[in-house]
Image (tube, rainbow, N blue to C red):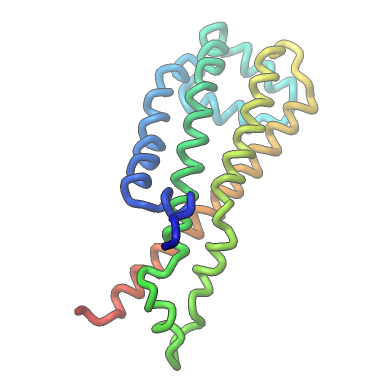
Length: 196
């Protein structure tokens, strides 16, 4: 008897529902702490700042309440990173597997497209959600260091945080595109398969 792997457990419907719900609820709970800095718009503005002077101007404009809001949001952000990484790992692992074990053999019939090309690509990219979370974690830690010395931030740290943000969102875009392709392919296969 084969024991399920950690990815198999994350791909189970109850776990996906739990981690998915956390991905939706955590940002809602953090909305109040981000309000003094202009909500998520203020957070995005600071993440897209590549130079130290602009960083200082933005953080000064927030005032003490905004700086405190940014600092308070970090704890929820760490939990959010874990939740979306686990949800993404489980979802990608689930979509990378054939829906039915016999479907891989059925796809190799003459005249059909190559068997599971998209699923094989997804299987290789299963670590992508974890890579996004690690990049997000590093960026957040840099922002924490910057906030501690916001009046004279390190230009290097500002640039690193900005670069990590660009990498994080680029990887997230790739993941979203891959998930959409997997869901579309699965829906197309379900529409073509004969009803039993």
